[in-house]
Image (tube, rainbow, N blue to C red; front, side):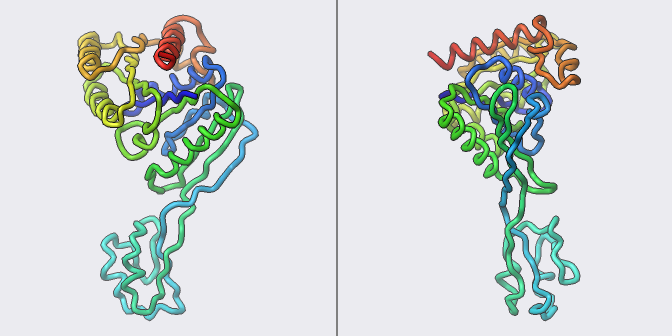
Length: 286
């Protein structure tokens, strides 16, 4: 079993479009969407017959009004200003628990949060494990790890060959949770200044965790100079270019129809994505 995680240093580079196309191209795989802050792989995979599970994480202070003497100590000492009128604002509370320790009446308790939900669904491409955080809930990486572990369990149980993971953008805790232990990271970038800057950062994270990388330059033809800079940077950091994908309106047209571009077209970007998947298979088997 091999896991390919698709990353991008910034959002909007085409990461999910490529993950959806890989879902259509690959055989014997489970899909995993670790971008729990803004999960959207399901828009291409069209999940059905899903099972829903609750995700509990973090804590919020709760004041027992019968015990509360309204001394004001908690309000005066809450650095997040989450207590007003001796009532806790759950959106402002950071769950540090300090108020519960200093309350002389022991009127404050910490309650666990329902932080989101995660799902196991069937799609035409195979099983999909994905999740959705609740409003204003913090993504610590715990939910990402849970989603990845469940995808791995399904792959082992069904004797599947690949896990295709749509990772979150950036370089924070969710990315580390998505990346650690993966067999290959495909980093999707675009030839812009912000794309180059964030590519360097995410490649540094991959290098730290000793995960091999390949780079996909999406819309490479919009700036030839920046494309050459990405090629040089990738070579210097020990990575290879998996594909140069041209700008193609067919990608947007496929998204509007809710299908991967490789199912919508066989030319342009779709042809290069199909070739890239073969290159990734070659990398995984060598």
